[in-house]
Structures are given as structure tokens and as C-alpha cells.
Length: 239
Image (tube, rainbow, N blue to C red; front, side, top):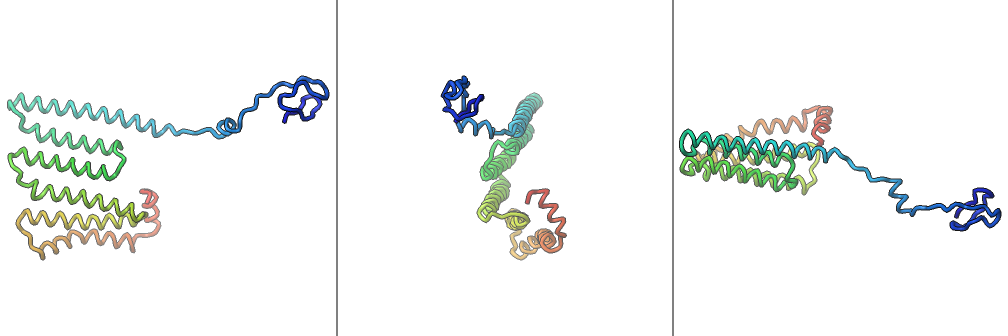
């Protein structure tokens, strides 16, 4: 309903002039409730993530150009000096593997499973190339492949357990120590197998000595660390 600005009686929205005092009532354009709701509660946007993403993209492009120039320069120098590619193969393969790690660290891959698998594949390609350039696969198959593959599998299992059980707080660190224990046993086993020293008793003793510091840290965090330090660490790392 509208009101006459002269006599104040209620009139219809499009009723003009006023039926009582014959005053000309101006037409008021009322907006719909949906329009008013949109104007009353505007949608806010945070420009900071977009700005950060733009800066990271520029930094990554700059690093990529540097990597391309470095790889090309090392290949050129090596070929000019030796008429073939010798040391540049090792250097450039390492540089490219590092570039892949930078790609993952800049947040272009959001899925953690893909990140873990991608880093594992990157490490396997690097180690395979370094061993293959020597003319034969001496240590990649018996040592590097099982260790990197086991590390990748343990990383995937750790992240799956954290998500499935909704682990929070210092329990995340506890599960991390458990994963480190399993990984240490795995690595130690293949190192001893590669050295032809697979003695079960010796393997258990060496593994126990390696895991002793981890066990002491876990016990200290659980029972000896002051509560104020725990809270400070939890706030610092969002545990």
C-alpha cells in the first residue's frame, strides 16, 4: 500500500490522484524482494587467493624458463667439450626431477594421492636414469625400486588411515611415527639384502636401535611434554 503525501490516507499503489484531496501521487518503483535481498546482502569475494595464485604462476613460469635455459646450456657445453653427452645427462635429469617436485609444491595438483604417487614416480625415473646411464642396472632393481615403491605405498596408506579415522591433533604425529617405524624396517631389510647380510637377528637389532629414538620421542610427547607446549605446537601446526 502507498500513502498520500498530503493527507496521509492509504491509497492503491497506482492510484492517482488521491481520491480524498485530489493530490497528485508520484509513482514509486518498488523492487522485488529478490532484488532487495541481493542488494541487502551482497556477495563478498576474497581477492587474496586469486592474487596469490597469480604470483605463484609467475614465479613458476620464471623457474621453468631458468630450468629450460640451464638444461640447454649444460647439454651444449657437454657436447662442445666431449662431442657427446656425458655428465650433462646426470645433471639435467636431476634438474628435471627437481622441477617436477617444484610443480607439485606449487599446488597445481590438489589430490594428495596423486601428489604422493607423482613424487614416487618422479623418484623412480630419476634413480632409474642415474643407474641406467652407467650402462647397467646394478642397484635400481634390488635396492632403489623396492624402497621407493614401499615409501609410496606407506605414504598412501598413512593418508588413507588419517582420512578414514578422522585423526586429529597429536594423534597425527603418532600415526606418522608408526609409518616411520614401518618404513625404517622396510628400508633396512632391503639394504641388508643388497649387501648380502640378511641375518634376521642382526636385522632386528639394527632396526630396534634405529627405532629407539622414535620411541623415546613418542613417549615424551605423550607423557612428558608440558601441556602449554602441546597447545603451542597444536596452534602453530593447526593440529
